[in-house]
Length: 164
Image 1 (spheres, rainbow, N blue to C red):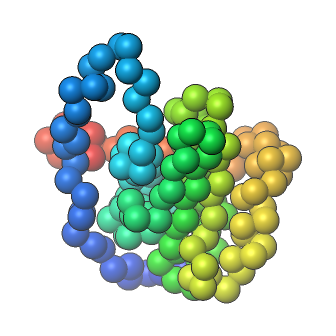
Image 2: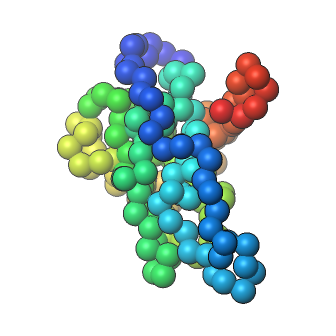
């Protein structure tokens, strides 16, 4: 990979606890459990940054407050904030988020991934690319790009052997 855009990123303390206490209704097979922002956040919080050995949560690229879920209308929107306004990896980060959600959610959901307003100098162009299903499909047919996306999605293990 070429020179890093953000050589010294700010690392943040994790805000949302790792352990989610399930509600009683989640164990009842007769009750339909709607998806919520926390569940979506838990699916994408550990995506690896393409430039640093850190997660998108560690870099505060993602946070639970920027996720909206309309379970009834099968719609999920994720807004992410690149670490710097000229981040060249923004499209790749958005693609990794989109791929993780498309691979893990039921196909009934329409997933929109976009840059948070005012956080990137090319947000319009990046958002247009990420919203275009044909461009996303074409990107995922590129073996080199798919390999990088899969590296972002791979779970890393800590020195204690558990997934981080």
